[in-house]
Length: 180
Picture 1 (cartoon, rainbow, N blue to C red):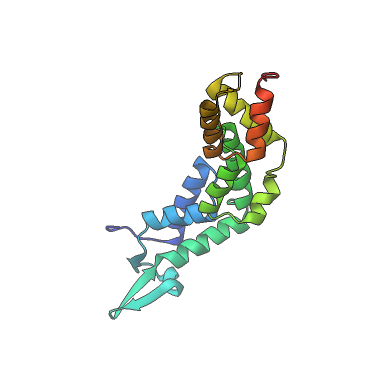
Picture 2: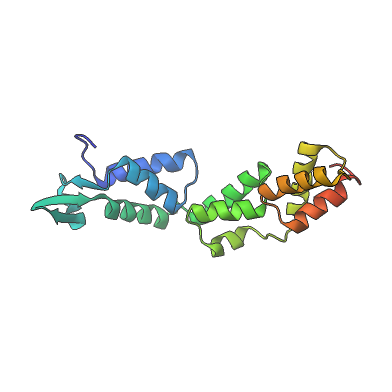
């Protein structure tokens, strides 16, 4: 960055701004902060001496170490939480009509470990059946098709939304019976 002094306070301020907008995982926060503050910046602040390295005889500030340290502080203070992020993310995606398999994949892409996900999401929970049914009805109406080609299309749609075969079977079998 041009003529920008990078300090722990500047990194923290940027991280807090991101967290004020929405919850972020550690991985997302680190990625966004690294984009904002280049990977290695010229050292201008003496309090950052512990995060320096020598490159071609010049002392440089290692931004990645400082970003990691600031995120760790925010996590210890309870201002950043992967658990809170996971809970909010699952609720948001479920509200959007996404199934558990897609949500699980998206959380992995955001650096969330399976143990954290499993604390907030049970893929065998009946709520996923109801979500699949609502998504089916919204897209195709309240009548399941008996035409194999259309039925195949409906099943593919629910599969791409991240629903398991059990969720899909439930949605199709229970659509004709009643509509929520």
